[in-house]
Each structure stands twice: as structure tokens, then as C-alpha cells.
Length: 258
Image 1 (cartoon, rainbow, N blue to C red):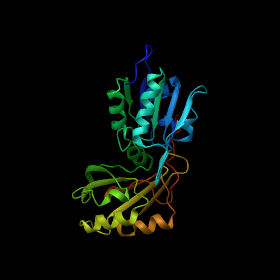
Image 2 (image 1 turned 135 degrees about the horizontal axis):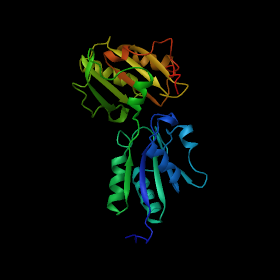
Image 3 (image 1 turned 135 degrees about the vertical axis):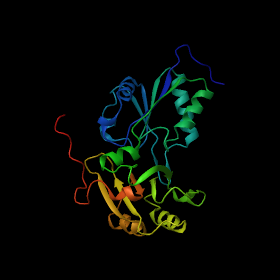
Image 4 (image 1 turned 120 degrees about the vertical axis):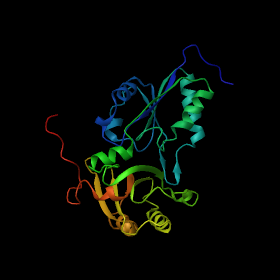
């Protein structure tokens, strides 16, 4: 068992938001500035990474499809080891740590080792993408329920999406680009109409953001034709037809007041 040093460090799980650095919370920015060690994901925006102090040590634990730099258990051990060495460790994650970010597992690892841990929420990718695209996830006329699901192909067959999509509902699918064909097939097999509106929001909140729209039956074709790459979200439901038009795909015009 590891011995706790006199000057115990801590771990701070920080949500870096959907990409744009100025969507960080003030607390998140302060934590980054105070960090001795930054353990970061690959989806953290370049502008956010530019805020890392010069003296901080960077540890890249990016996860990509079919490539994990470190297994999740090893990431937990890394956080604990660095904190036990007396360091302020910032675990920097895209979006929010507790929405498909495995933040819960990392908190448990710290708690089991007696390491102080804090969680700083971030703007989730779904909320950031919807806001940037002017696409309300709930709307009095269109949707009174919203659900977030993971669309990874390897677990699709084990997921029960019954009742998550349909009239009056919005479904937001994370990590679904590579499995777009299987996702469309699954939803239609569960009874969702082929002409249900869908939208794909790529690189949300960044200057290169794209908002692409189609119908559910053509979702695989849209992803293929437009060569969509991650990070991207798929939004299914009537609200997917709202917001920015296909002719305004880059970003919403900013308020000139600031």
C-alpha cells in the first residue's frame, strides 16, 4: 500500500467544454493555471491547451477508436500516483467529466486511495453544439424530453433505445459517426420513421464547425458524402430541423457588444 506523504496533492477533474476556450468556467481556468501536471484527452481544444502554464507537465492519454494510449485503470493509477507525490493534478476532459467522460471511475480511484478529488463541470458537447447551431434540444412545440446515448458500434446491440426517440423527443448520440449506418438501421427497426429529421454537428463551437441536416434514412449517406469526422454529434428528432440553415454552416454571428 502506498504511503501518503506529508504534503498530499489533489486531483481536479476539469470539463474543458466542447472546444472553444472561452466556454471554460472561471474555476476551470483557475485550476488549469495552478496545475503541476495536466493529464489530458485528445478532444480538448487547442486554444484550451494553450492555457496550460509553461511549468506544467503534460501527459497525453488520448482515446481514439481502436487506439487507447492508456487503459482506463492505468489512468486512475496515474492520477493517484501523481497526487500522492504532492502534485496538483488536473485531469482535463473534453465536454463534461460526468457525461461519457469516465469521470465517475476516476473519482472512485481517487477516493479509494484517499486522494482529495474535485470535479469542475464543463459545458457538455451536446449543450455546446446545440447552442452553437441555434438548435434547441427542448422546445415547447417540438420536444419535452431529451436523451443522451453512446453510439459506439461494439455496444449498440446491447443498448435499449426504445422510447428515446420519436414525436416530442430529442435523441443526442455521442460517438456515433463511425456507426451511422447501424444507428439508422437500429432506430428504424425500433419504429422510428425514416423521414425523421437528423442533424450532424461537427467540431462544435470552433470556427470550422459544420451543421449538416438530412433525414434518418439518409444519415449514413450524409456522413459518407460530407466525409464527417469526429468530434461530431448526431441529433435525432424534430428539433434537428431548427436552427442554422444549411447555408450558414460555419458559426452563428457573435453579439457585437463583446
